[in-house]
Length: 216
Image 1: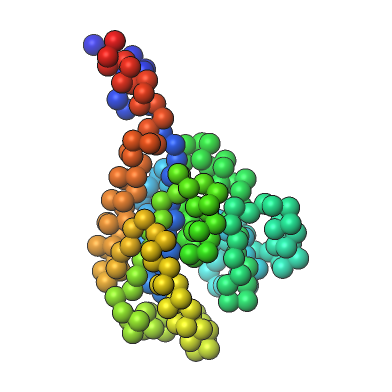
Image 2: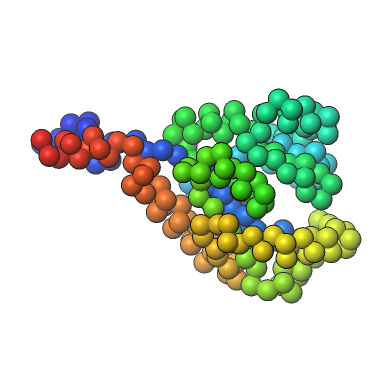
C-alpha cells in the first residue's frame, strides 16, 4: 500500500544548512568547495561581494560580485550583508537576500569565508549554521602551496603566512576541524559531515507529522 504524504519517510521537509568552510589561504577550502558544488545539486554557493580586483579567469557574479569601495560601504550602511570583513586591504561580504532566497527554495548554502564571517553568521543564524575549519598539515606545506598557486607576490604570501597563525588560533570556534594532508580524503570527510548534518533531527521539520502518522 502506498504511503500517504504525511507517512512517506522521504517526503517531509527539512530546514536548509548554512555550511561554512574556513581555512588559512592555501589550505584547500576552495578546492574542496568546488568539488562539493560539482557533485551536489542541492548545494549552492553563496557569492560574496568584494572590492578586490578581478583575477584572470574569474567571472563577475560567479566567483564574486566585484564592486568598488563606495558601493560596498553603501551596502554595509543599508544592512545588506549577513556578514562582512576587511581582509588584505579589501572588503568581502555575504548578501542577505540571495542567501535567504536559496534557503527558501530548499537549497543548502555553502560559504567560503574566514573566522570573522563564520562568527557573524553564527550570531545571526546559529541553529542553521555548520562550521568546518580546514588545517594544513604544516605551516611549511602551507607556504609551499601558496607559492605554487603563482597568484600572489612574495610580499602578499608573507602577509598570508603571518595571518594564517591568527586564523588557526580560532579553530575552537568551529564544529568540525579537519587536516587537509590528502585533498580527496578531506573532501570525503567534509561530504560526510554535510550528509549527517542534513538529517539532524532538529532540521527534519516534517518529522513530527510523519511520527503522528506512524502512531495512528
